[in-house]
Length: 225
Length: 223
Image (cartoon, rainbow over all chains, first blue to last red; front, side):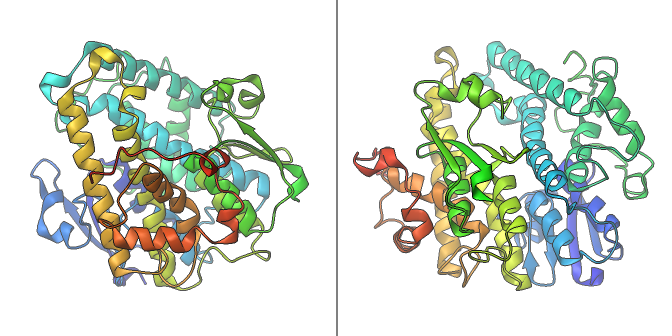
């Protein structure tokens, strides 16, 4: 039950937010929720390392079962609690396949966002190149244009794979994050529409990050993408 | 059914191999199988981009349904063909949790392999640094040691007693390590896992053709 679950998380981190959204969707409120600070390096603290030797958030336990990988945790929760809350994996083969496809592409999307936003954190000063920064930004642009196309018919009830699903749980936080760093709604109107259509969904509205992870990124970093 | 399925794949590529293993495990032999060459750039051909606009392999279709993301394809095949072949998703809660954890950690393992072994493929010449290569090598070594540790605590499979989706997905990545010369004596648990699982029919039947008669490389022999 929810009270046997523990989630250590950081505010504004897309992988953390995914797990929080699923817990809401599956009516698993009441879990032990611990907000930690990336800025204070609390993700490297002993209490995290005890659950997650990688020193990363989210760190999630269901009793003695540990799943720190956010997409893994989402799949686990949907499969263990199929009969309660929202159905997050469609039954029809076509919708199900599209759901898994977009869900995993969401991982690629997050990586390309991270490559741009975290460049200075990940790459030591002596190894940085303008050519790399340029290429990373171009790759992210190409990726976002692909998603803009995926969402060309987005409407209420018609999201990444039809009805709201795990694909949306995984991908929505990525887009919300990108817009926090200046992604242009004019350039990506369908993505902006998608964000707007779902921002009042209870699981998203009640868990909207109070603040967004900001280590060295600046708020306008994705403005020109 | 299998004859409505098409898989375009490249030899030795873990993402491709895992889908082939899943198809074998679910008794879906008889699918339309097309081996393509990365070296010849065939992954960028119209035949691939017609199914996968990202010009990547694997490219997989089941009738009109397209699923190019290998994790997605593996999970889909288990879900859609639950009642045939081998059960790849355990009912036991603890095994299921560990399965999902290891499955997705497999992404990290593969990324660290790519960062290190394919450094010169992904990084243009003017951007390369010995310091970066050294760091990537150290990170890969630390990651491999982590997996050795996992198999010290759990076995014989990645999620425990049964062969699961975690093995379908991650075995090809571990096999990749040994193909590149990982020393079995330094990593006995990984070696035992590799040597046990490689004889599984689904894996023997889908073993990369280009690996069969050629020696591997030894980039990892000093780990």
